[in-house]
Image 1 (cartoon, rainbow, N blue to C red):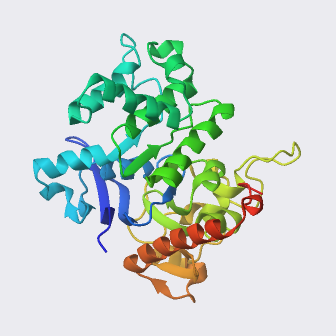
Image 2 (cartoon, rainbow, N blue to C red):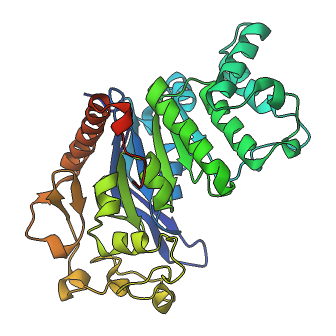
Length: 362
């Protein structure tokens, strides 16, 4: 079955420029697949500098990979005709971090909703255009009569971000790539925006790639998760298993950094190496685990050999020599695993009575 959107062994290297001959590996040999038949919510998680936004820009065709390829409906983006690329631009939409930067302060917010419809010719009349916009706003929990006709500064950050979700929705996308969509929004509004994204997946069959450094929201919305560190995949699998029982030392660091409602517990308290103690170490060897300088369980081979993915559970794989007795997982196998996770989660949700569905974090 042809994937809807796929990254195949993608690497992105940024050069330093004319007078700087150093290179930065922003993403290394990453594979990701979104199936059309099984709409999913896939989380890409990691701290700043892990390659999350680089991956988003590659999937959106904003930048080109150094090696590997991005495919949409089986076609390399670089080999698409203009008509095929236009379809790709409409069906793969983005929601970015800053809900204010996307607006022109001199225009009413109506403009960001009308322009996509005009550009792609999706409304044959003013009445149809109005109907599409109203439906999209209502889908994300906004009242058209309280939203349209206003300038960006007259709306809250949460309202502005939900309008950007509605803007993507009017184009009837197949995939939404949401890059830190709630990081600049008040905590009280995050749940509303995340629920909007989950509803689009649940009711309209739109796949969501949710990019975040926040594992709390990742747990709330995700089915699959890929954890990145300095461009390399460290752990992948079912989001509940990975976050509740992290296996890679880096994933454990991220989970331990989640603040708890306990004034006596410090953030990141545990046996991990202090991140500040190795902050100056920016050069990473091209061979071996990139996390080795921060890892309390590092072994000699961690610096000398590249680390494969080991399948440690039915629905999880880890790039760490601590699990070298487990079978090695190839990229194609990891993609099949993630598809199976989506099918399993959907089957479980369909079978469970509404009263028995657990709340996130419960």
